[in-house]
Length: 143
Image (tube, rainbow, N blue to C red; front, top):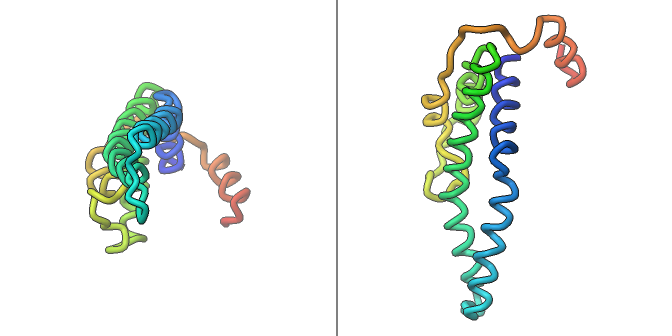
């Protein structure tokens, strides 16, 4: 339940910062600039490549900020804020070496780094009661 709350708080961080809209406009802007300058070698559209490379760095920063804001939102609400780190630990364990992509080419920071930065605190109330968590798991087909 606390991992789910951490992920939901992270996503709320994206929405509060309007990250999806910023990314959309940023990507469109790079495309317009390169199209205006006629940058295209025929075999590869440089605007797409340039936009992707610029977007990766910006997207990683969006993720870092959403992680930090998610932890802060939970703490401000009086809830446990260690669930996001627990989610990243579980993700890292499940993905193993497959999740250790080169950060330069990834749109997200390394999961292990995100776990360290999102430790939060075990103090506070759990996001859901045991009965509420059981109901959520049941809706998802989990015992």
